[in-house]
Each structure stands twice: as C-alpha cells, then as structure tokens.
Image (cartoon, rainbow over all chains, first blue to last red; front, side, top):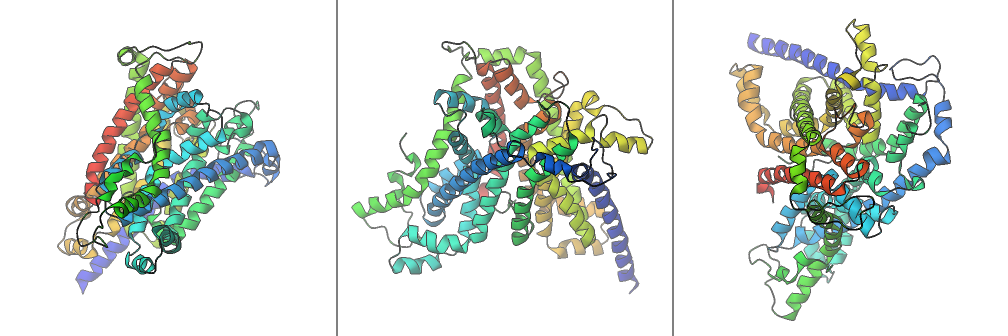
Length: 281
Length: 315
C-alpha cells in the first residue's frame, strides 16, 4: 500500500526531527551538570566546562573532613530523617480514617489540606522566625524538625490518602470480623499492602527537606548545627578564594543521596513518582 | 492548645448509605467509636495547628504592627501603615515587578512550554534519546536547590560556560549576572523546574487514546492542527493544574536567586521573597517584612483556591 509507506516515512522523518530537538535541549541542560562532574576531578577547576588535564581525587580528599562534610551531612540526616519520620507517621495515621470511614468532616479537612499543600511556605518564614524567638525554639534542632514536618504534612497526608484508597476495604473487613482493631488492621494489613506508596511519601518528604535551604537558613543559627544545604554557602563566604574543584566535589557528595533515592523510587513506580496523587489532572 | 478540634464529636455522624459497614449503633459506643476514629488524626492536626496555622495567624497579626528586630521594647499596632508604606516604596514596587517578570518568564512561558514541548517530542522520539534527555532534565530537578544555584552561577558568570560557548560560536559574550540578572535567574528556574511539567504532560499525553490521534492523522490533519484541536483540549485540565503548581512554586523561590545573585546587583533580581528577607533581617523591620509576606501569602492563597477548583471533582 503506497499510503501506508508514506505514512511510515513521514513517521520516520518525524522521529528524526523529534530526536534532534530533544538532543538539542539535552545538550543545553547537560552543560551545568557536566561542569560539576568534570570540575570535581579537575586539579585546576574554574567556572568553565572543560576536560581536565589530569584526573585527581584531591578535591574529594580536601572536603572529606569532619567540619566540612561529615558534620553538615550528619546534621542534614538528623534534621531530615527526624522530620520525615514524624511526617510519615502522622500522615499515615491521619490518612487512615480519611480513607476508611465516612464522615462529613472528611471533605472540609481534605479541602483544607489541599489548600495548605500549595501555600508558599517561603512567605511565612519571617513570622515563623519571630514566633520561634518568642517561644524559644529558635536555633534548636527539634523546632526546625517540627516546622519541617508541619510544612510537609499537608502534601504527605494527601498523597498517603490517595495511595490508601487503592487498598481494597474487603481485606480489612475479614480482619475486623476476627476482632482486629482499626489500628491493628492499619499496621498489619493496609500499610504493608501500600508499601510502595509509603516509600514514595517517605522519599519525597526526605528529598524535599534535604534540598531545602530557606528553612534551616532562618531557624538555625549555630554553625555546628547547620545542615549541608546551608553550610555549602561557606565555600563562598569566609574561606577567601573559592576553590571551585572542592565546591564541585562537595556538591556531588551532598547531592548523591537524593539522586540515589529518586532513582530507587522512580524505577519501582515508573515515571509517576511524586505525581501520583498531586496532579491527576 | 486542645488536640484535634476538627475531629470532635461531629465524626459520630457516620453517613448512612451502602458504603457504611454497619448500621450506626446508638449511645456511648457510638461516641467511643467516633473518638477512636478521630484519635489518629490528632497528631497531624496538632502539628499543623501549632507550626503552620499558628505562624500564619501570627503573620496576619504582626503585619499590622511596627515590630522591629533590634532594640524594641514593645511593638504597637499601626493598622494598614505597613501596606500603605509598601505601595509607596519604590523598592517594593520593583520587587513586585521583578516577581511578575520572573514568574511569567520562567514558569508560565519557560517551564510550561518547554515541558509540554519535551513531552510531545518524547512521544515521537526513539527510546534511547528519550531516556537520555529525560534523565538529564530530571537530574536538574532532583538536585538540591543550592547546588542548582551554584551550577547556574558557574554557568552564567563572566568566566563561565555560557560565555565560553558564545565565544566558540563567535557570538558576543557579556557578564550575564550583571547585565541581565533577572533573565539569568529565570533561565535557572527553567533549568531546574521544567522536569515537573515534562512529567505531568507526559503522563497526560499517555492517557490520550491512540485511536483518536491516529484517526485524525489518517484524515489528513497535520501536526499543528492535531495539537491544537485534539491534544491541547484533551489535556486542558493538566495544563491548568500544572500552571497553578508551577506558579506557586516559582512565587516562593528563594535559595536559587539568593545563591546566584543575592537579589543584586543593586536590587535588579530582588523578587518578593528576597525583598521580604532584606526588610525583615538586614533592615530589621520585621513588621514591614511580614506585611510583604502576608501579601505574598494572599496571592498564593488565591492561586491555591483556583487550583482547588480545578481539582474539585477529585475530593
């Protein structure tokens, strides 16, 4: 059939055009990424992307020290780990009755949650600072953890509820007839069945907080408490001339955990990571 | 603060209907069941009230005071003076204008259009190209905000990559962060945020039944016409939600701009969040800074309400 051949050739040429377009965008997007990768092993790194004369691990050696890397990363871990744990536990508990029991309060509660999900949290950082000074939570890890968890909770509850809705109720009803309480069925039946969903909420919350700069920047003051997102600023501030190679090496060390977590979850769930509940448009 | 106000006795009213597992029993058991059902919500509600609703209410209060950071014994209520002052303040109006430019350029035009274009191209492209491009664009999105800021700082600096590329192409180079700072940070936001739109639109396009586009193709409708008359109308809800989320995200960008330019040179890339920070902390006027924060919050709330209307069938 001549008709189908022209259709096929047209499709082929369209594919080449699409490939070319995508590769052009990819080339533009990759340049800043290439800079950080190449500079981290370049003994004479500057601000340009260039192939290094020789490959060295000196930059990594220079930053892998307690005060530069390990303390900030540990702080990040305590801060984000604590807040993520709090977020996931609270969100799972809150999502359960919302998903399982009918109540006329569900709808208003969920609408409030969606509303809060999209509020610009940046805007309230100044009043949060003022409030934290008044109640003596400023410059404390626990205060920052609580605020982090609260800011992430609306979205976490919303996501968690959507994942929970996917677990059929019949499985639980059997357990109820056997005398299990709601809490037992949540713990033993619902959460294990929605394992991937819990993983998404956990990873998403963790990644959001790990990368967040403004919240710890405002709420923590003591240098030893600073997480990596804030301490990375020191490379520009008080160390005199910026050693770009070391900055690049530190950027890689600091980014690796979130990139790995993303890959882990994204592969398990296809491309729908983080979009599962939020933007089913 | 009492725990769990929204989950009070009102929960007792189990809606009658086929989905209710049991007919509602009467009396004390009923109240007890309502409480056990409300109990799990309470930790979340307490956290949200104390650390989110509380600061927002406090924000609405101190925006009307002359609270200052240093040396104030007490602050007093000054009504709308902060807001009146803001609208007479050239630096504030400059920040409003720059926020508008930043949002329109980077979110409405940049992230949205580029994300849609990438998603459409990906439908037609070969698999390896799709994977590589997707991976690179998503990597830019996953990186922490401050790292993204540094990478683009290096990219746009006078000695940076962009000028090296322009030199190589024999095009004029310039000091981007000095001559066009708002454009540079807008591009940075596109670099960082496009992946989200790309994923939203890819998901939406995958849900369009193949038969529809194929039928139109056989009928001889060209690429643009299919896009305009079939694809775009079918994904219009995704476009709406994506625009809302991108805009809200962009309104609250702080770290990216802070790292790249600190709002400068002068105040030529100072969007509202950076202006708010400067007033509250560098100039110690917490009341004034919070008034700006409240305005930002109100604008954000309006967008958020529109977003909720777009989602209304889902709840």
